[in-house]
Each structure stands twice: as structure tokens, then as C-alpha cells.
Length: 110
Length: 116
Image (cartoon, rainbow over all chains, first blue to last red; front, side, top):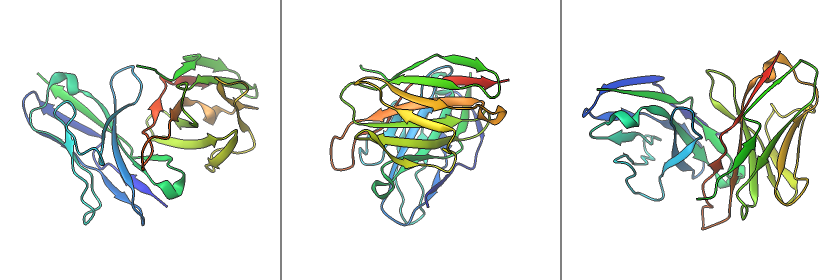
């Protein structure tokens, strides 16, 4: 069975400070990892997927298979980054359904 | 950009009543999903649907739940006899095929169900 763990429920940082959201997963096969973001009163939106290896809105995430982690990082947080962030895992063997972590609320203070 | 749409945005119902939550997936998508999020908890998978049948369901998705694609556009979730613990945000999602790994899920805005 797959599992996604986000150990921090809340991260509070000042504008311009770095922010790192931790995500660890467990899955015996070859998963695909995602970060979804949910801004206030909006839908869940895809932020990053590990196979894209791209930077979106200044965020990056690297899949570390040895540590089974997919931490999300941004070197300089902005106020508009305040949102809920969900790490999710998809496995083709599991019908490609997404398994979500518990989410981390990021609050960027001015 | 096309979006998944869900109606209503908020549904209040009495315990024991039937509710139908409606979703219009993105038009060329073939895989459909329902997720729910109880307040303060994680987003949980309920069911996936492909080729007019359920492809997978979680243990949450018991006999009180059913899904249907009654026409070419709508995808509905029915709860036959609601319980207080069914109160949650229900998200519909869809995806296309695209690529070796498949395309990512696109989510609707959700329907907040309140059972009183």
C-alpha cells in the first residue's frame, strides 16, 4: 500500500525567507510524485510533478528514492505563496489514483 | 483553460436523505475520480471510473455510495442515505491519457456537503 507523510501541518515564514515543505512516501514500486497547491477558496491545482523536473512559481522538488522523499523548496517565499500544499503519490499499478499527504499550510508573513 | 466543474458548491441535507453531487469533467478526459476531505483531515480517495465502470474503490465507498455517468458529460456521486459522518468536501477529478505516465489529475472546486 502507498502512503504519503507530510510531517509539518503549518509552516510560517517571513517574506523573502526560504521555505521547505517535507514529504516522505512509502511505496514498493515506482511511483510518480506530485505537489498540489490549494489557495484560499480555490481548487486543488497541480504545482509540480517529479517527471517534469521543472520549476513552477520558483518552487522545485527533487525525488530522492534513497530517502523516499520529495521535498518542496523555494529560496525566497512571497506572500502569494500562502496556501495549503499537498504532496501526492500516483502509482500505475494502483490505477494511477492519487494518494495524498495530510497537507502543510504555508503562511508567508510580510 | 478547460476546468472540471462541480455543482452545487454547498449542499445541506438531513441525515437519511439521498444526495447527488454533480461533476462535469474536462471534455476529452477518460478517467474520473471522486475524493473527499473531512474538515481538518487529508484528501481521501473514494472511487475511480473508466470506460463506464468503477475501476477501483476505497473502503470508504460502501454500498451507500454509487457513481454514474448518465450521459456524455456528467459524472455523479450519489449517497443513498446520508450520515452525519458524510459531511465533507467532495472533489471530482478527471484526467486524460497523455504520455507514458498519464496526465495529471484536474480537480473541481468541490462540493461542501453538510449533513444535519
